[in-house]
Length: 188
Image (cartoon, rainbow, N blue to C red; front, side, top):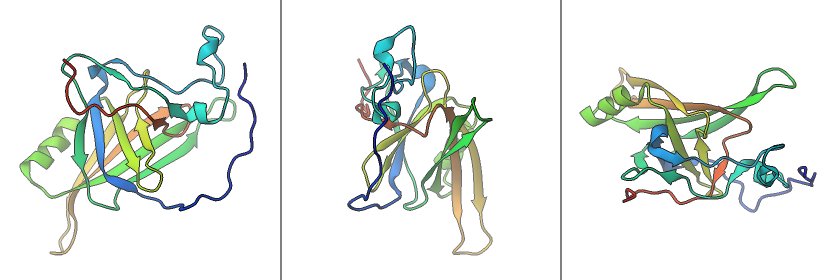
């Protein structure tokens, strides 16, 4: 079964941008199962082949955590979050590099400690779009999201005092839409 070609596009009712001012993250190793979008082709499992464009970019069911594990929340500065998906690689073997950039205000010990802790972690990260409510995911079953951190205190008193955190992954397509539950209470 192949993906059926279909018409796409048109006008959105209210095409606004931006991200809601929080992300959710979990260690990649905290999951028993991470669900990925359906594939373009899968000779071994035909049921895992997408029949629509939407199925290629949608994670339809929730991931399964190990006992006692859950997502954690990070609040960030309003209107600083961005998601960018860029095609990388040569024709015939290209992927997408997805980047989620946020700013966490301040230089409290907890913020600086988070910066230190997160720098080498392998994660799954979720962020909600403001306009559509779509929850976008970085990190997949086979490849985790990684992190780069920069903390800056600018010289002017009204300048920035914040950590800029960039989550990055590589995937077959743009950061997919996650439709599962965001578990904030540990599984028991």
